[in-house]
Image 1 (cartoon, rainbow, N blue to C red):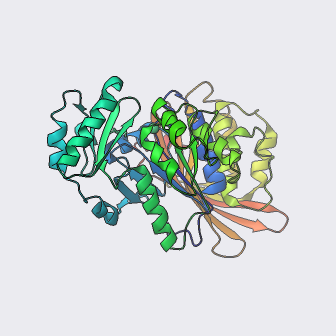
Image 2: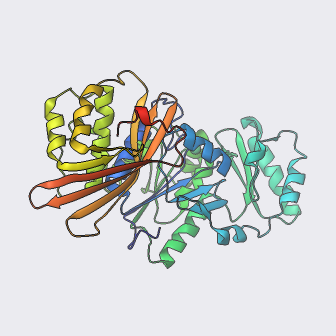
Image 3: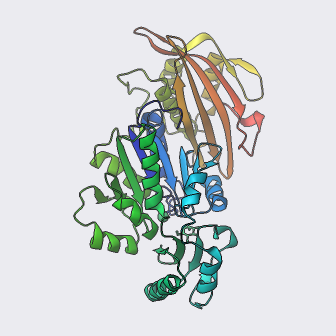
Length: 422
Ligand code: GLC
Ligand code: MG
């Protein structure tokens, strides 16, 4: 959050499973559309927050399976764990507030008396979250009885039913909504209260997100029965909450447009994007557009045209250098020339490219440094390079690529120099 010197333009607080991530879409198209939109138009002045029911262990697994961006803030275990930045620094202050009228031992002891409750995996049992599976038909009754027992034992807990199967027991002060309220308060104290906040969800544990004041909300089209029921009973007349027509991340993009929160056209939805000129020079845009072009070129989705190659060469400096992750230095223009032979080589294959954490700085006037993580999914294999691009901006001439340097990202499992192009 330190990188922001003023209040973020937009803060998106999104659930992951069946909201940001569509488990029914093996191509992850709506997620990739959201990713390009975020990196293109929001990353530099906005905040991305993931709020998931998953524990840190399962969250990290999902990151390996799906092309998720890196959020600024990660809220896990149904609002009981808040962490910041890439290194996920925990918010200890938040954890302390959760100990009020909470006793893990008593919660487990009382819950164990219900044969209808089946304990979830060990990874999902957290210091302030105890989770079970329970049949839909039993959920209401069990919840009621459990609450009475906890009350008798002097505890103040919250029981949440999600996805028609998961039952979570948390401290009363926890949950996704309370975690968001805490975050907003914290940002306000730092003078960084977001201009707009959009909460996105699909199931029971997301309901609270939609009752935080001044927050826009979107229930994605595929929202669960329990969330729609909650909405009908509690928030029907709130114009700030919509039920989207589109699934998952598509619904998030729809809500950005509906509430007029900023640009809502993903670069992935523009077919002739190399032609699309933006009013203000933003080198971050150039990079997002280039890697999207690169994906389409290799998938054979753009025509094999000399015009593209010529336009790319024209915007790169004649003596520009590309430092390959192997350490080899090549001419930037030669690298573009070589692209010719890769046109369509990934046609019909599971090949996707996305940029994460695109940030541009203008240290000296007329010079921009753009940093990003460039990821490539090729079938089952994923690899990524931390990429630095130096641009110069000349009056009336647009941006010129001066220097590109790539090094293998630490998280990149595969580091195969021979098949990496750029
Ligand atoms: C995630 C968690 C699970 C929890 C569910 C609903 O699936 O892994 O423990 O019960 O979210 O909050
Ligand atoms: Mg969900």
